Image 1 (cartoon, one colour):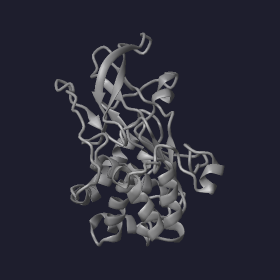
Image 2 (image 1 turned 180 degrees about the horizontal axis):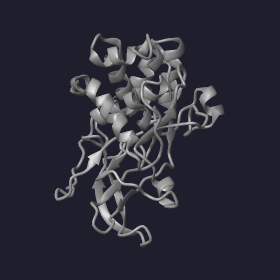
Image 3 (image 1 turned 60 degrees about the vertical axis):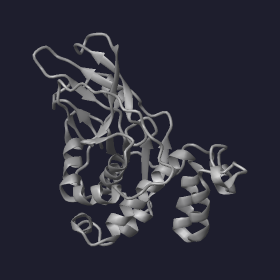
Length: 287
């Protein structure tokens, strides 16, 4: 699970907004799902939503690459590519990050060696992973400032998965988290008993990586894959810092590989507008 905080603090369990806003990513004990955006009947019939593949001009069809890829491969890979196609633009984003992760896990490097300590075929297991989109996932950053303490930010969770789920597991991605979004609105609370107030916008991050960036997306998928094969300790949607520690563990073994594959050219990359963040207060960002 990805968590972004400005300090590691103990928050009372009665604080109801912890559940509402969540961590950046986490392992779960709930059953996985395959596709959240479309009905199962649509998935089985091969129909896709209107956002993907409906253009009559092939030059403007953002999903043309998906169609070609799905037709060029077979079996499990074809099924997964078709499911990503059904998720529209977000599925395209997932597919690009997924390809980068496979590049890392299929190669001989320190990152793949670390994952092989828990799974002898990490690339094969990751290739079998399904993806689901939480369209109504949490979207706000919660900021808490206690008297005499540093301000703490809690970001909406990025992703979740089942601990030790193994092959054919599902990674659930929050459509409003740092996998797809660069910034989010902040709700600030001066004290635990105080009212929530809007406090502008803040940058979403996965560790030190900006939200909606390839390094952040790769790190997010590797973090969840670590839970799926039992390489990382279980974490949850809380303020205890375990999710951040798990992310740092992934980066300790995989940072150089993440940076290397993230620099490969990307197609249909749209420029993003930047937002100023509060430079006066440092933050500990994690998974």
